[in-house]
Image: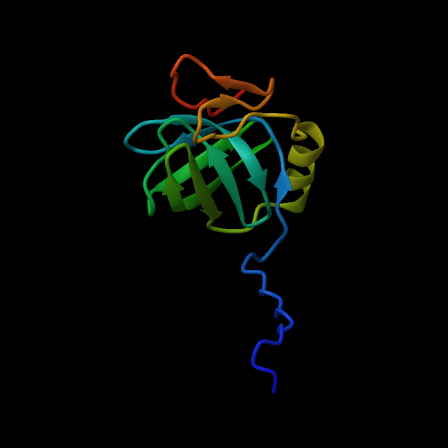
Length: 134
């Protein structure tokens, strides 16, 4: 055994049950406390990541609506500007394929701690808070 020998890293097992695909379209999180508008960041058969100015808290039950379907689920995690949604049941493959085909992900600015404009490569925008959408 070598004391300072480099070990081969063991692959980390994938926690997700299905692969995610980056998409970009408007969504609405419908809840008893009120509706929250947002955008898809990515989607899979079993869940989605959504950007929103005021995302719901972890554990909230929501009905997610978007132009190509709707699904019931629960917020699995939440942080400023973004949340994860786990669908109660896997969405139909046809609905997933239609969403991926009609709402491909294009360039977009995602939350930046420095508040810089990643699209234009510019610096701080007069001390404005970070933008979540482009």
